Length: 315
Image 1 (cartoon, rainbow, N blue to C red):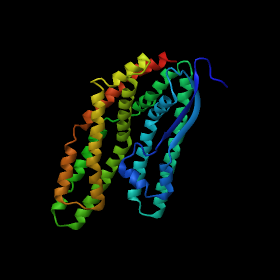
Image 2: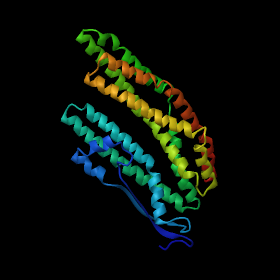
Image 3: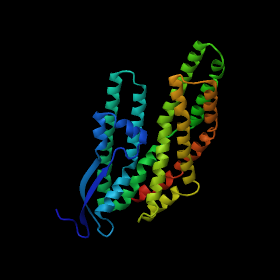
Image 4: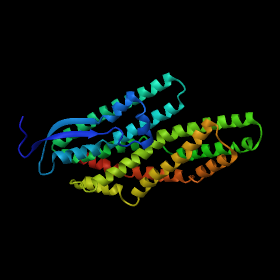
């Protein structure tokens, strides 16, 4: 069917590497497993045709917009791959390693399905009367929904408190000569810190992903041709929002960098009194992260009313 008057049929093609948002060490780990290395070396794709105004869109511009649209899905895939690596690091049998392969296969299959759905919906909206504005809205819609799921009150202070208490609980046993007491104390501390790491990788990482996604969305929308969306993008980048989101992102990385080595050392039992004190000091230095998180989530939620109004106006 020929394109409608004033429009041109364009190729909506997407090709992104699954590893785009992953940490280098996770990518390196994936390459060690032949069964999944091929899956992650193959791009996630989407291919369709859509009729658009050629004065505003080109094939190249459309592909670039689609790549930006799926950043959130790639970030979630990166988190799932990191979680699979943690399972692998703890694996003690071939059957557990098989489980890891299954987790990765499931994660990449889910990512492709989510990308297909998101691209299809966005292109359908783009082709409609208010499509271009709605395509811009799609970049923020999912992030806004995620904000409602965030409950970080006392989360970070709890994680830091668990870590510092675990470190302090080792002082007396590590200073003594009773090996049984040392191992018992290390074992208990290890369980406590592993639980803290799990919380960090769940709600904590979600908060960090939403912060990153919002910042990226703000930069992309600030010059949008739709005035409301441009204003929304600018709102994200204002001094009472952007710095809070950036600080949450940075502080989350600092907490992960402080907590993960402590968990690893406890797991190996490779710890002396000086090391325990050093880990406690590193974690105590992050005591302000809870206030940072509270401010960041409040900043995120301050955007919701404005976003809801834009959604209603574009119905």
